[in-house]
Length: 131
Image (spheres, one colour):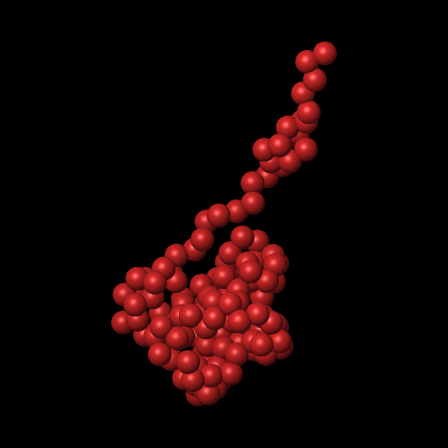
């Protein structure tokens, strides 16, 4: 067994799932074997992922290893953010008020509405012809 303890948590958003492991380290972030900048190329997505670490001022205290699957980049970024926030709670329960105030501990319930039979989409109807 390793002497350093790893804290793990799961984050979900839409159809994306992120399994996050937090290990005391230097601030390295690896997602599916790639760096944060490689995996999430845009700055807003990178900021979304880093938000829980930034707000708790633990940017360079932990190495983050993520296994993300499903959904698109936005969904995965949201899932990673939730996973990191939940893992930070395992590290220190005193961070809860800070993370909760920012809304990082709430799972976003918005999902895609299913397509219904007898119509082309979730809400769209086929064209109606009176005559």
